[in-house]
Amino acid sequence: MITAKELCGKAKANVKEANTEELQKAIEQGARVIDVREPAEYSQGHIREAVNMPRGVLEMQLNQHPDVAGYDDALERIAQKPLYLICKTGGRSALAAESLERMGFNNVYSVDGGMTAWQEEKRPVVAGE
Ligand SMILES: O=S(=O)([O-])[S-]
Image (tube, rainbow, N blue to C red; front, side, top):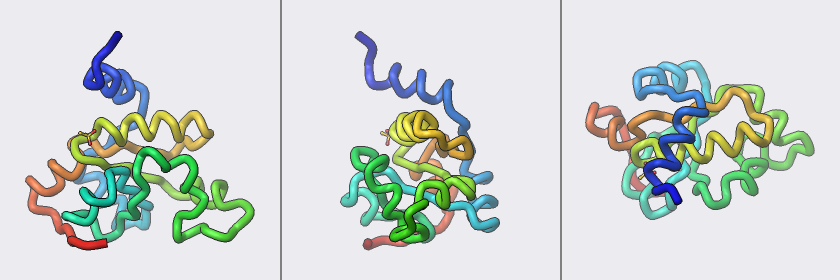
């Protein structure tokens, strides 16, 4: 048996991580951001450019991302740009990144420190849906 913290630690060791500085630059360059927290957490404060797809449904909903929804090759399209996953502190996003890598995505980053770091650094957030 391992704890959730250990599970996340193993995932973090397996995936590419980015810090908030790198995320901010990536957003400026057009990268996509998916916030994998639950809707109630997202609505309390999120990055303006982030689309909410909770970790529990991410793999199933990815082809419905607003940038690619409706295309037969939605997943191939979403894979064409770097994808940054963010959660509260970087645990769920690492698990989610691991899963997307298993689906064949190789340009996926988990944001280390998550929204906690983003907000501690006073980077901009918006509330609501
Ligand atoms: O997994 S978590 O960092 O959002 S608590």
